[in-house]
Amino acid sequence: MLVGVPKEIKDNEFRVGMTPAAVAELVHHGHEVIVETEAGLGSGSPDEEYVRAGAKIVTSAPDIFARAEMVVKVKEPLPKERKLLRRGQILFTYLHLAPDLEQTRDLMASGATCIAYETVTDRHGGLPLLTPMSEVAGRLAPQVGAHALEKAQGGRGVLLGGVPGVAAANVLVLGGGVSGTHAATIAVGMGASVTVVDRSHEALRRLSAQFGSALRTVYSTRASIVDLVKSADLVIGAVLLPGAAAPKLITRAMLKTMRPGAVIVDVAIDQGGCCETSKPTTHSHPTYVVDGIVHYCVANMPGAVARTSTFALNHATLPFALALADKGWREALREDPHLRAGLNVHDGKVTCEPVAAAHGLPYTPPESVL
Image (cartoon, rainbow, N blue to C red):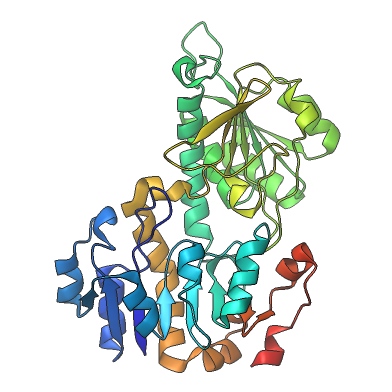
């Protein structure tokens, strides 16, 4: 198979779909890989490393999309990239279609076979291709939140860990999954007073066992969230409904009860965000203020630590990319129900039920297109 790796064009996105090591694995399996020039530069992999791995360097994204049978990316294709997709081509990347009707329609119109990292599953019920970036985003959240709390950034002027004689900041984490757990780990390590809310008793027990008295767990209800946000200096939204839009746990009305200069870091923004006032931002302009509350809603947070993120992502995606290249998408999806769960759009049909439900579109079971 001819596999193409274009350079990411989202604002300040420095990750790349395949590392030189991943390219070498595909070449070893007998495949050909073309990489857009400087695609890996932002994550520390110059063109020469790709050439040594067996790739051919091409000069532009249109060259990649015109020739490749499978395009491997990191972020969802932007409008000008979507125009380059064609019927029968495989697109393997993050898509996050539930909050994005325009992208969904464009992918349907392209006729391409679009497999989303974030809905691929595993036998334990997890999301193995989303997990590494959830870990990165979770660990980044207290870091960027602490910066946004600084007075010069519009925040309350509160140090996350406090100092002797002055209380630490109150950090509220919404969701005790992968992102939430990693956010709590870093926030506790920075000395903050941390509370995690979740509706899963299993998650609350796991967190309690992991952190002991260093962290407080609360069962998530509307009433508990209303109460907790009032005293929070930093709220980290880390809720996830696989493939579906994130639930709006923080309403506009709740902002008025929060401390002026408090910060919301909405890690769930890829799926529409868990705050009613959240809207996607970029690394160039990461924050905005609503009712005195600083919102950080960068939709590609892991791009800030591109080298770490690229390697973590490639370690997870490589086995699936190899399966798609070795067997073709139909056979690979027939054999692996977990990879099959990643099929979101094929030949104009929506094959991911939560995406279809989010947009009121007809749902086609993936099994029916195999």
